[in-house]
Each structure stands twice: as C-alpha cells, then as structure tokens.
Figure (tube, rainbow, N blue to C red):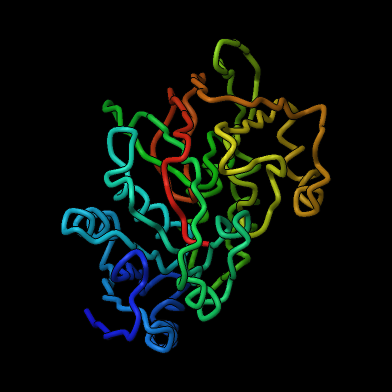
Length: 313
C-alpha cells in the first residue's frame, strides 16, 4: 500500500485505488507507476490496494466504505469494476449513498467505459479522476442459482444467460497469450456443442415462451471487446433492455460483423424487450454471466435499481 500527499484534495476525499495487478496479463501492474505519477501531479490524495485474488476487490471496497472513505477507484477490466461495485451495494441499495466510483480501464476487457464515454488509456483516465463531475447511473441486480443455493450479484454493464455465458466460461479457461483472440476462440469452441433451451420469460407483467440460445440483459451498450450489442441502452433510464435470441444459433455467427457496426437490430431472430424486472426459467438450465464474470444458472431474476451509483465522469 502506497500513498501520496496532495496540494488540493478531491471533493470526494482521498481516493482508494483498488487495482488488480494481474488484469490484462499484468498490464495493470505495469501501468500503476504512471497512474500514481498522474494522481500525484494532479494533487490527489490516494492509497492503493493491490488485490490478491477473487473477491478481494469487493472486500476492499466494503472495508473502505465502513472506514468512512467515499471515493473508490477500480483499476483493471470490467471484472474489477464488477467486484468493486458489489462491495458498494447491499440488499438492493448503496451501502453509502454519497459514495463515488471512479474507473481506470487498464485490463483486457473494458467495455463498460465505452457507454459512459470515459477514456480507455490508463493515464488519460486517471486525469479524469479530478473535479466533481459525476453521473448517477442505474445498476442491474441478478438473483440466480449457485448449486442448490440462491445468490444475488449486481452488475453495471451487461448480463447474459445461455450461449454467451458458455462462451465466457470457455474463454476463461484459454491461455492468456491469445490476447484479444481469446473471445473468438471461446466462441468457436462453444458454438458447435451448445444446445438451445426452452425459455419461459416473465417481463414485468408479460409472459413469453420461446426456444432460445441466448439472452442479453443490458444496462449499457457494449460487451465482448467492443461489440455494440444493445445500442438503445442508457444506464440512467430506469430500465433494462433484453434481447432474446430466438432464431437458429447460426445467427450468432452470421450477425457477428453487424453487431460491431450496430446494424443487427431489428432482426427477426431477436425478440426485444424493455423491462424493470425479468424472470427467466429454462429447460435445461442455462449458465449466467454478468460483466464477464461467471455466476451460476437459471432460474434467475434480473432487476434494475434506478440511480443506485454515482460514477465519476
């Protein structure tokens, strides 16, 4: 843990920089010195917590808030943001209403910041941590099955149930040297063997039944390294956008170039829903991921928590 003394503090107090040094194949560890230098030059007081394993960022965030600190900065990819976020919410509400989340995208997967228009570079993102500009944004809540137990997690960006989650799980088992190609390798390894499921969806007060291979539940717009999957989503509109892939699973391949260009909607193989709450049951059960992190399986409920988080912009 290191610290630097400022000339002028942040309006939100000292920064708690929660960094995953292993994110991006060690990219974060290599960029931390430049991040520290940028914060010091900006006159920001900070301390750094270097995470050591899964769940540590959540524990660090919860501990910081309990100790009276209010400005938490996630340094890493979407997974680090996901963990810090889950330390900032509890029982469907913010642990502390005046807490602020800052983000320095420096990992291998940084899709969340694209919707917010935040910089992708570590130094430029660090410079944006000054000042008092914040955006009040909604947060997604998902309740799912982990074995025989029901669990709850929060997500900032996008959750999936079905083939997309299976791709994330397979990608996580591939070697890091594949870099940006990991997702595509995971996709092609998953596609041939994946089987669609009969899904029963309760979208607010509407009920549907389809045979589907994937469901995307979006608070923001991008995932999978720049895929513009849900272009209508806004993180402060009080709703989730659900895309139910009801066409043949070959659509996942043929639509891929269009998703990057945001020209895939409307599509006859995609049912579009706008919801505050979505209940999903599937036969057989489907895997679930959120913000690129594997969670559990269906049955699951996805809900929106309006205005739950202040994000530094």
